[in-house]
Image (cartoon, rainbow, N blue to C red; front, side, top):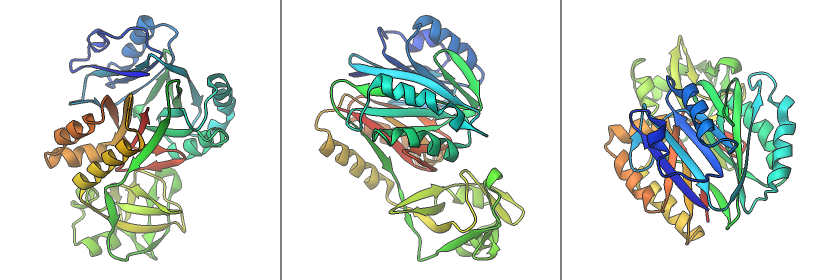
Length: 351
């Protein structure tokens, strides 16, 4: 299989798809103002081709912040695209769509991946989707859309998750998650006074969450939102750590970008040597896949901001380009199998 990437900084879809012929699966990354128009236009250009889309930035050797990008797979894939609706209340109502598509594509853990763009309630959505995927051992990579809208097969949806099942006819697929943070000290917290619906963390070990964060890091209220780039929270998930970014201060509580529940065990994280971590991720992919057809990745908005502020973003994209055909998009949260994480990179590699 092969991967196509095209973009237009000025939002011209015709420019973005120049040179794209006979795609077998399409991903549209547009801007909020032009999203619905681009969805309809892409369907007219490639009628009947399985497609998913969302509002968000995309990248290859550079980042497209307000334009449009198209990532396509062709020359050896089998694909299906669809949506689960009512994700805020009952995504499981539509799970038969995914089950049917899995049967149609005929995928397995060796050669198939699910890519998703979600409009919200990510943790619940991923749990729902993964109940169907895990029966075949199929991995998932995806992220959260800007603006609460996604698209599938030429239609725009709100309160939904769009997914694409992609089977590589020419080899294996494998997913990866990159974490550039490690534990700070031996701090260990039990969360309480949480508001699950609004992702609010009220208390840590019985003390107001804001005061705990400030006292450890010696920051002011105003500095908390930028300090989360360096020191997010982490939730212990088996042998893994899910990163939790702070969104805003709410009184003495902290609103986060992912759900925290009462009795969750949290730790405090600190930024590590992200350049070394990136090099190791690339080296690991090369060890696993001596030959690669494509790499599709999702980078967190906060990683993009952090890398940009430190003058590393362009270097990062150049280093990832050494893998071959690499492209992706900037998400407001990252998906890896059944996990919803923040400040991370997830990707899928095609042999």
